[in-house]
Image 1 (tube, rainbow, N blue to C red):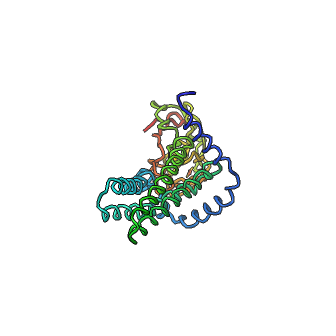
Image 2: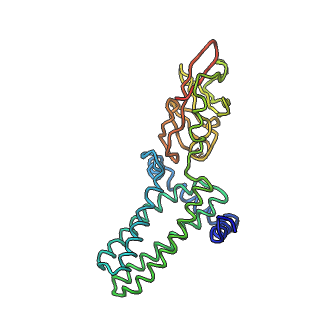
Length: 288
Ligand code: FES
């Protein structure tokens, strides 16, 4: 057996099965469509995506329900104060709702296998929330030992869900920087990109030192952004340009042409922007 071990291989097989279940597409697409409509307003999308934070919000919030629930279960097992256990369960349940809202917003922009796995991830989290809510209710009704058993079942749901969530990030790349991890730094010195006359108000894609770059004229200035959207790799050079901003054609993230800052999610990170200068009728670029 390899270093990965039997349990790791089994878990990978199960995840692959889930990702290949096309039967999930109907419900996944319907739910994602509803979530996309509900989260369409710019402010709400940016809030749920973590754009205001400069960091995806969902992975920040997931620590809350997991931490509260785990603490409640452990405190209960070691015979801790019953009221304290109930408070922790309630805090976990409430924070799970906010965490679910951010997760659904992120997931609604996924497609194919990650969308299927994300649906199962959400269903397992729903199972965890249901179990911990039931545990709290039966504990408050006096059946504390029954509540302990139900809470343990909730922990099992949450653990399986966390595995799938980790796979979505580390294997499928949901939420990671798709612009190439500071790929613009490859253009560390002034490098020729295009003739000045070739750059207009319509974005143009050029490749400089293997880095795809979007060039566009913005008034008297020529702006340059890495052309691969940080959110999920969309082609920014095919996006709409207006008011000093470019809107990604895939999920509508909006970036400043000047410095790449985000004014509308789902992107949470700024788009890498490059410096530009004119030299003898040519446009040169350099990483900022
Ligand atoms: S790829 Fe999703 S907003 Fe650009």
